Each structure stands twice: as structure tokens, then as C-alpha cells.
Image (cartoon, rainbow, N blue to C red; front, side, top):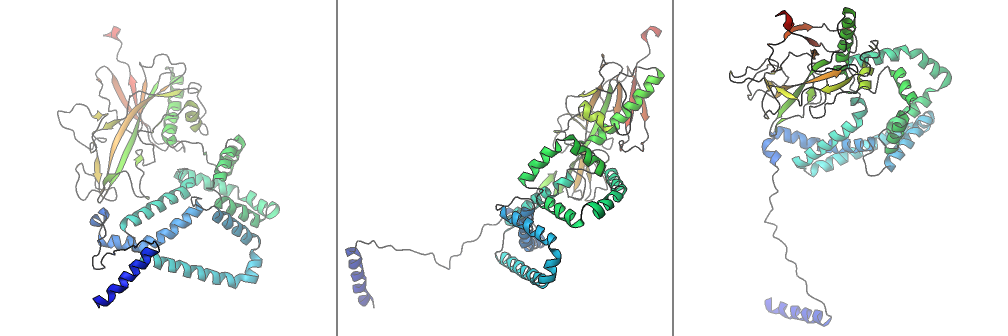
Amino acid sequence: MANSETPRSEDSNTSRNKQGEHEIRAQFASTASSVKPQSSPLLSSTPPTVAKALVKAYPYLLIVNKLLAVATWTNDDYWINIILMCVYGFAVLYFETLVTWSGHLILVGAVIMYAVLNNRIVEETNLRPTLDDVVQALTTTCIKADILLSPITALALTPYDIKRLLFTTVFLTPLYLVATFLLIKPRTILLHAGLFLLSYHSGYSRVTRRLVWKLKITRVVCFYLTGLDFSQARNSSLFAAAFAKVQKTASSSSTVGADPSKPVRFTYVIYENQRRWLGIGWTSNLLSYERAPWTDEFLNESSSVESFELPNSEAASSVTQPTYVQHPNIEGAHWRWVDKAWRLDLTNDGAITLASGKRSKTTANPTADEGYLYFDNVWKKPSTEDSYSKYTRRRRWVRTAELVFNNSTDVSNNSTSFASGVEDISTEDSSSKNRKSLRFAEDPEPLSDATVEAVISEDAPDKKDE
């Protein structure tokens, strides 16, 4: 056989050389040698049951991710959104005609779409995605879901805001009934509301809303239709409680005869919350249904110590406008920081006992694990020591601010001090001052959600009397 094959190979070589062609030979790897896939670092730290559940959920994540991309206008092809809006408008305008003539076809189309989605799920499952692919798909889905729900989450509605919105809606029910029966058809309302929601996250809609929102009439109409003030800052509850107490103190001091222009100091308290994740450690990524990474002492969401800003005079005074009559001395008052930076309360509101040699109870440069109080998975069973059964922790930051009035000349002497729910933790020598602690009861006003503890500084006895 070898002798018989040799002339053929020589003839083929000579014929190829005559035609000026080059011989190309390819060598393939043996099928017996299999390349082992690289193992993901997540695979070693993830339980098998969790990994199996994530892999099974991967096709559904892709489908949800695609739907969220269309809803948030983050997909590559905007024509899908335009066609969807046209189909929605056509279905609303000609709903009776579609159901009468092609209702059975719509049901068959729904069954066909379900079959197509089922085949897509089976195909994606057969691809055997890695945990990295699943985590990436899950992260992308969460980001797009946050974008979709950002209009609602950005409002940061409190229970009082929800009650106010419900009361306003019930109060305006007669006007809505008159409008739907006499002025606008329900089909028209449904059409415009659906098109507004479908195009809410588009670039053109965002620009239009920003331009319209600059008009004062728009903000006034939204306020009277909902009863909500959409221009409030995130930390408005803290500043509202502060200004409420300032106005009461200013009014009472003016009647007694004291100087109402003394600067007022407030100690703001922010809690830093963290959760322990297996394989990652302590992070600020908390579960969606629990508290925020930064909260006040009443678990209301707050800004972090890096982004916390004092309000200007107009924004701060407008918070108290609906309930309190503006005191003339508070008009034009402004905030300023007394402390240079946020300081960590090493005692965590007295829960942690410090060593006898440690004089200061606060520090501006704490370590990564300093000052924490540890809890279990549901923020219960507090402990000062970390253990395997502790999955959550929090620590306490404090900083003092001062409210200075326009006619205030001396800001260092005779200043009234307040603390937002905390005791005085200053390390200054208190031998030269007599301090009286007064706790104000919680007011029923909606602006004061917190209980503010006042520490009024009094001057020492007159030296002439000594």
C-alpha cells in the first residue's frame, strides 16, 4: 500500500508545483486531549445548592434583563420602544374592535410567545453558564431595576407622606369623577398615562420634564394634586426638627426677655450600617428590604458623612413654613459647622465601655472595625464583640453644627446647644459651665419626626459675686 500511494502523492505534488500553488497542511489536536475549563473563584465559596439555583435562574434573568432594558430605554435599538408604544396606543383606541374580530388570534399569539420563551429558556440552560455570567446578569438586572424604580425611590416617602398623599387623593375624588364623566373620557386618560409611563425613561422625556419642572406653576400644581413637596432634601426631617425647636426656643426666649439672637448648636447623629457577606466580608450593600447604609437614629435614610451637607437658609426655613409661623430672627439665618469633621463615637451611645486609659470618647480617624456594635441577621441581639453568628453591625458618627442669626455678633459666647437625640459627647472641660439637660417631648406636627434633646448652656456665676 505504501508503494502504491507514493506515485499518487508525487504526481499531485508535481501538478501543484506546475500550477504555482503552495501546499498547506493543517494539524489538528487530538480529541482525546480535553482542555479543562478554568474554575471561577466564586465556585469554591458558593454552596452547591445556591450555585445550582443561580444557574437555573440565569435564563429568566436574561429575559427580565431584556424587558427592563426596553422599559428603561437602555437597549441598543429604540425602534422596539417606538413599536411598543404604537401597539399600546392602537390596542387602547381599538380595544373593542380587536377583541371582537381577532380575540381568538390574540390568545393564540400569547400561547406562541410562551412557547418561544420556553424554547429560549431551554437553549440558555443548555449553554451551561458560569457563576460569573450569572452574577453579571444579576447585577445588570438589579441596576436596570433600580433605574426603573428610581422615580419612586427618589421621593423617599415617609409614612406621613403616604398618609398625606392618600388624604389628598380621597379629597380630590369628586373632581376626578366630574372630569371623567364630563370632560375627559377614561380611554383618553388610559392612553396618555400609558404612553407617559412607556416613554418616561427616554432621553426626550427627561429633558422635557426638566424644562417643565423649572416653571413654578408646575411645582405648585403638583403640590396641590399630591400634597407632597418634591423639592425637600433627603435630610429634611433632621433640619425640620431642628428649626421647629429653634422657633419655639426663639419665641419663648423673646417673651421671657432673654437674647433671642444667640447662636444655636445642634449635634447631628448618623449611623453607618453594614452587613457581612460570605466570601466578601463587611460591606455597605444591605438587603433591599432593610435599613439604608446610612440612617439617623430613627432609621430614616440619610446622606453619608462624606456627602452630608447643611441646608441653606431658604431651603431650611421652607421646611417649617407649612406648620410654624416664621420667627423674624430665624429669617435669613444660616448654618455652619462647628466641628471640622465628623467624629466617630467610640462608645456607640454608651453601649461600648472604653479602656480606662482612653480619655477621648470620639475620634476623627477611626480604624475600619472601630466603634461597631454587632447584631444577628435581623439586627437583634447586640454585642460588642464580633462572632460567626453576627451578620450586621453599625457605628455612630456625630458632628456639631451652629445656626447663626443675622443680628448675631458674638458666636462663641452664650450659644444654645441642641443634640439630635444624643447626649453631649464633647471632650471640653465642663468645670467652668453649668449644664442643664432638657428633653422635649415628640410633637404631633408632621415636621418633627424625631425627639430632639436640648442641652442649654448657661453662663457661670458672675465673677463680681465671687
